[in-house]
Figure 1 (spheres, one colour):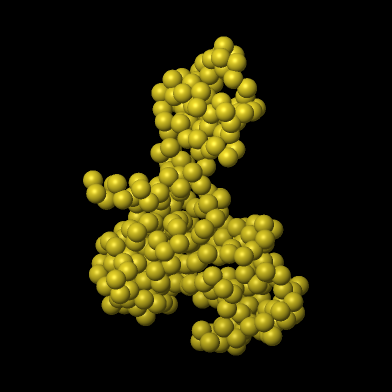
Figure 2 (figure 1 turned 90 degrees about the vertical axis):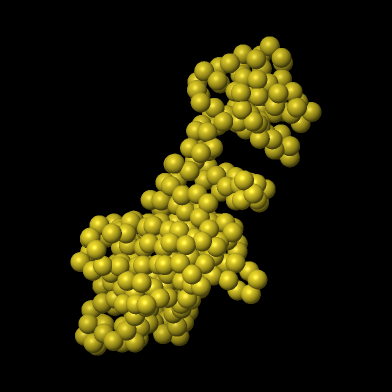
Amino acid sequence: MSHTAPAVEATGLRKRYGTTHALDGLDLVVPRGTVHGLLGPNGAGKTTTVRVLSTLVRADAGTARVAGTARVAGFDVNTQAAHVRSRIALVGQNAAVDEILTGRQNLLLFGRLSHLGSAQAARRADDLLAAFRLTEAGGRPVKQYSGGMRRRLDLAVGLLLAPSVLFLDEPTTGLDPRARAEMWDAVRALADSGTTVVLTTQYLEEADQLADAVSVVAGGKVIAQGTPDELKGRLGGDRLDVTLRHTSDLAAAAELLRRVCGAAVDTDADRARLSVPVADRVGTLGRFLREVEETGLAIEDVTVRRPTLDEVFLRLTDPDRITTEAVA
């Protein structure tokens, strides 16, 4: 297989637990050296996908291959699980480090469990402590670490054997904004070094910040994929947001927007806010403001912006939309 083969490639993955279809024909391709985000609501199949790809769970049907190095062809997760495990790492939602041991002792312990020699484990521990800005804290018990420091140490443990592919399942769950930013920096550094990263996340901003490409998962299959910008573009490019002074004007303002923009208007009655996709941001804004001046509507604020990944996520994973497309 060529050295340009994907780091991860899955076709038609299926996994059922009783009557529940956790995976229902999922397809996934992750190029080498990229960060790929798996987004989806709870129960969509994200974690099951990671567990299948990391050989923790066997799929009922379908194929999946995880690449080794650039010189080694992909390995089948079912028939060559040992080869896959030697080339990947998995960091789960909860830190797996020992709180009583120091940071360095944890790395030494996991290094020895990974069959590294004592000298090699020590060198690797020191290198990783430095890489994750934990050298000064390396001699302190982990129970004294902040949440962000624990997660960085957990990530360091996952990298002891320099994996080709790193799976991160909800890597920043429960972290405060500062600790989350520290983890983002660590993930970016990994990607820059050539490691392929596959991450699941509930934070849309996280995928927007980190992922080169995103797969939106719902009902056990990928329903949309692309770069964050490509997915945002599916909502019609720029959007015109209008906040009204009085909720009683919502209907009149929505009709005006439909007439000016020629598109469906999203209404948020609680915030007296309307939103509509626009193709010509400057021209549309000018026409709308002239109409507002003539009608006398009381406008609190008007902005033109790019759609957020949150909006894409909510639109793509809307149950009514998914059901309608499945029937069609």
